[in-house]
Length: 376
Image (cartoon, rainbow, N blue to C red; front, side, top):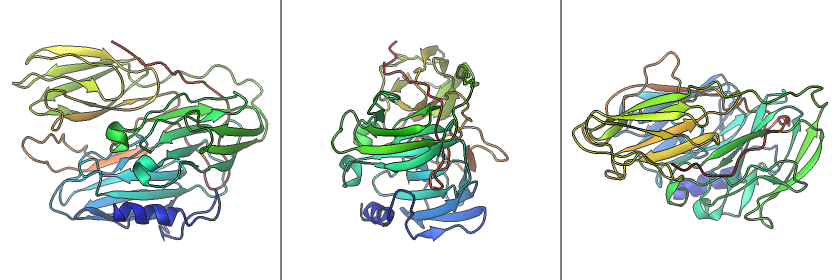
């Protein structure tokens, strides 16, 4: 917890919404972070847009680098192995190890400079996890008409990002399981009309407020939002005792097929949605329908919850697949049965083409997201 408080204190040194804390900064396109025992070193890092950060595990046990806003996860990095993320989206990213979520926390600040970029990331923080005031990060910013905003809940309470005049509303974005101990959800939307938009959290309207200034010209013919190009069906094997692969992606409303190839019964149950395969006996398969709202959804086997967990990523429009692994071998599944295997995980982060966080660009063309829960 001391390490997390230090991280938050450094981020708080910023003098304004476009300023950054004076912490370690990557001068080139590649930066290395060492995992030592239960720490990221450095635990606060500022990098330019497009930089690749490599986490080298020098400890004697596996660790992950996981976004608290649910946009990426390296999967377990074995001792002696490394995992890497290429950051193509400006913004602040609170990261943690989902194997040791209370002890290992850090912050990556991706500086977009002054260039116009396609989208921007906004975080919701709260005292349930970070022991600070309720707030948005950033609370005030300027963006170019047509850019996507990704709203990520990295706290321990549910939040919304809602325009005071009703121009946009994310709906309630849930925190991660166990009061934000694990990764929360995220929602993307766009604005096309220039202007100044005051926004607030519907759940904490007095404490959480901010302002977006949209500049430039509205698209002449915005047209309908393109559909997701993600796969409509995803397949996951249930083995004893793990999900293979532990992270899969699917289009909104797509089917996820679970096949039990082990010797024990299992389930696949979303943590924050009423979606469940029911008990799947050895040799059987079961299917559930993915939520319609884009974001990351953690799931577990209710019969072996401590050992079997996974992440389902529902990909919205114009969103690259964070589980795609270019130029590297994906880390093998880690379950808890036989111990962590070796492997390298590389994930390119381009969630909805996010935009100019520190340079002052990034939002437009609006697509309202649904509030309802998918039941089956």
